[in-house]
Structure formats: structure tokens, C-alpha cells
Image 1 (tube, rainbow, N blue to C red):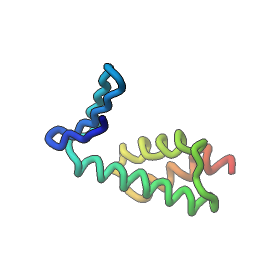
Image 2: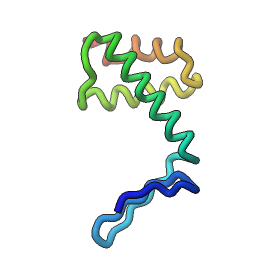
Image 3: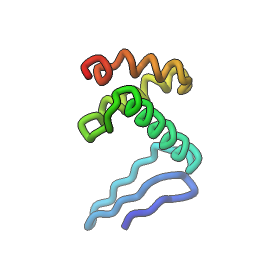
Length: 91
């Protein structure tokens, strides 16, 4: 059973008799904002690198998003993190 607990924003996963529960988001709005930010970072990287992002790029993209979070996801901070990243430097 997969489900979203709408009151506290937790994803519940049931496999056999084991239950896994993670609470990373306060609510659906926070989840949506993070997804939008992650998608924006990926689109910006796609444009900058002139290629589609692959599964191999996932860790680098997550690192970019984490670095940008410190500056409240301001565009200059995202762009600087991208240009200074190994993803961009080693293209």
C-alpha cells in the first residue's frame, strides 16, 4: 500500500509485514515547492550543458539544490553553484 498522509505530509510504504515511514515535508505545499525547485535546477543544467540529464547526474543535481538552499534558491546562487560544479566543469 502506498499512500500520502495529508495531515502531516508523510509517505507510508508497506511491504509485506514491514512498514517504512519518512517525514521530510511539513505539508503538500512544501513538497510541491521542493519538486518545482528540483525541476528548475534540472532544466537549468540541461540548458547549460546542452544535453539531457541522466540517472548518473542525479547526485550532482541534488548537491546543486542543497547548495542553492542556503541562499534561499536565488537564481544567481543556483547559477554559480552550477558553473562551479563538477557537472559543468567536466563536461
